[in-house]
Image 1 (tube, helix red, strand yellow):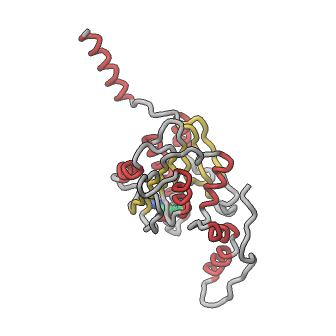
Image 2 (tube, rainbow, N blue to C red; image 1 turned 180 degrees about the vertical axis):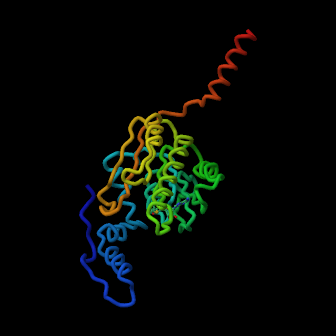
Length: 246
Ligand SMILES: C[S@@+](CC[C@H](N)C(=O)[O-])C[C@H]1O[C@@H](n2cnc3c(N)ncnc32)[C@H](O)[C@@H]1O
């Protein structure tokens, strides 16, 4: 389990004033959130850091990772962790991150300010990370529209695109972690992941707010890329040509 939080006194109230009741509730929850306080103390840019650290504590996905791609990185706490575990430096970049929001530079992280759904994003990320990644992490959440079902579907779509990206780029034995929603992962996506990874599971870390339907999907132990049907047919043709020409 993650350590007990320390720091400023919890249970603080925000004075009634100009703020709308919903904004006041948000602010109160934020300033009284032990993970927010801990993030500040430990130098992380967001409380989200503890979701990744907690998942790692139980499932050991960061240990041994040499190259990491971070999808939906702003403000940057997962990238901070990724840079640390890979020993990434400005001279030898091992972490690539993407977000359409600006991310304040993080030493050792190549940051792309771009929509992950942009067709150029996969190639740019691979180029930026400088080699085959062994971990793809995605905390992407679609910007909220106010319509819960739309937001949910958009985030699920991001999770799905991230999963197909992961099986395209990961090194054998690598892992994929992505934000999803309770009961939201499509059966088709799950079966694709089960075919490609040795273990697939859903996780709700303690640091993920209990009232939130957020969950994480973890696929461990990538089995390696398999040739597509077209590639297999091409190989078979080539083998036949070899036999004929002997
Ligand atoms: C929960 S935040 C990520 C927090 C981050 N893991 C951290 O530790 O600081 C989700 C991020 O996903 C980004 N995002 C959502 N859709 C995206 C997309 N299509 N392309 C790039 N980033 C996206 C949002 O801009 C947002 O910054």
